[in-house]
Image (cartoon, rainbow, N blue to C red):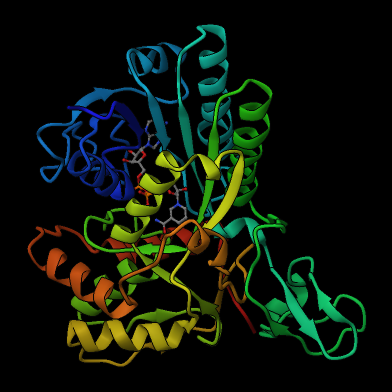
Length: 374
Ligand SMILES: NC(=O)c1ccc[n+]([C@@H]2O[C@H](COP(=O)([O-])OP(=O)(O)OC[C@H]3O[C@@H](n4cnc5c(N)ncnc54)[C@H](O)[C@@H]3O)[C@@H](O)[C@H]2O)c1
């Protein structure tokens, strides 16, 4: 017997397709809403071949109220993953898709009195901004983004906002947020809506702040962000993986299967309602260390290359504390090495028809989103 029907927006995407597999295996009926947008998709309007046959598909846009109405008909719960991502300077699109899309979801649930039992909204570790640090002199501090003038000179580490001295990164806790770019501001607006509008109107809602998610089916066409795809595509094209800054940035990486399980847990566990949770890998790796794992697995001919470039609005160190989600019974099960192996096995079987990594880097440089320190 079905456990109910779940609408997954962005269901043709990376996390959406794995979440569909997870929910179907657990006995749910699944409906996917996606506009199959480039650069994630190829622009032909074709649904990816790996999507489960049992999942119902609706071609539609989360900016369109009629598409929402069609997609929400007969649905018990929503996993809202559709989003505009990356750091290109078309600022308004982040808010049209991510913020307005989410507000429309709540607006329609309220207006049409839909009996939705749960909404799970995808947020991001990016909402932390520069995050949480320890200063020997001033204790716990929250630097307010890195100084563009220091970045332009290649000083990568943030400094204590009180004394200007050296600081050490601490794990990121859900109680904090300080989004500093168009993507993270829009993502934060989504989680604020989920928790506040959800509570105000009695629509149980949960926001998950994913760390960097990795695994098969992550669109290689959209190589504007995501170290795994950029490093892998570069290595497979015979180039060194381009490592920004000095490669000393700390990040945590979580496997997409673990994220799909986190989505299901958020869907099923009422103790999660009206709360925000980190879903991360539980351990930090430097970007250069991670590039080394990719190079080894892809059998790259060149070691990773530090470019000295930096992404405007990027953060230096981001490692999430996952204790809160662990207390609900979730645990990451796969290492970055597992994710890299799974991704490379998958991409070797794909017909990658262009040098998407080189094209994306050129576009980022041209738009001014990627700059070189001097
Ligand atoms: N992948 C990560 O590392 C990561 C990390 C943190 C948060 N997230 C969040 O997780 C969610 C899913 O990310 P993903 O990695 O699967 O991305 P993805 O790009 O693979 O999937 C997103 C899907 O949304 C669809 N989409 C985009 N705009 C749409 C619109 N206007 N209407 C309908 N569909 C639309 C795309 O066609 C795509 O299939 C996003 O909300 C993202 O912000 C992802």
